[in-house]
Amino acid sequence: MVTIEVVRLSVHAFHGVGEQERLVGNDFEVSVSLDYAPAEKAVVTDDLDSTLDYGELIEIIRNVMAIPSRLLEHVCGRMKDAVMERFPAVSGGKIKIAKLLPPVPGTQLGEAAVILVW
Image (cartoon, rainbow, N blue to C red; front, side, top):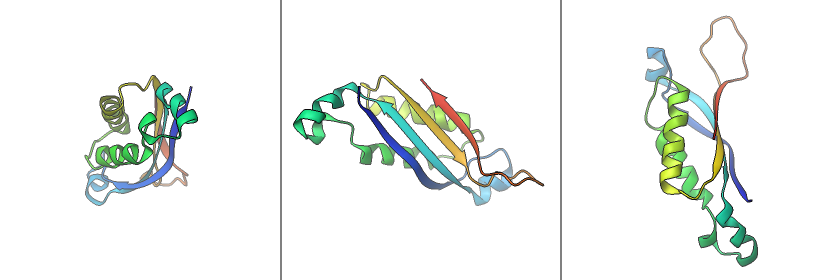
């Protein structure tokens, strides 16, 4: 099995329950890991057509992140759907979306994240 990953892609987006979050946005990091058996052929052929193009995957991530949602769980679900529509041979995966500066008064927090595994 070959796993294709995009790790800690930085994106500014407008997700959040609070109105201020949806107005000014926040910085996020998105990581996606996909099990993609057809890429086993690329191990031998060195042919891009035999694998999942991570440039296309990055574009999917950016497009999904550009549509505001209140909940990161919802963003993860939309991202999974978009990935599966484009790459139906994906047999499983993991999406992590981390909000880097969550607006929680009185706390010093590295990130708040949602992880979807299938």
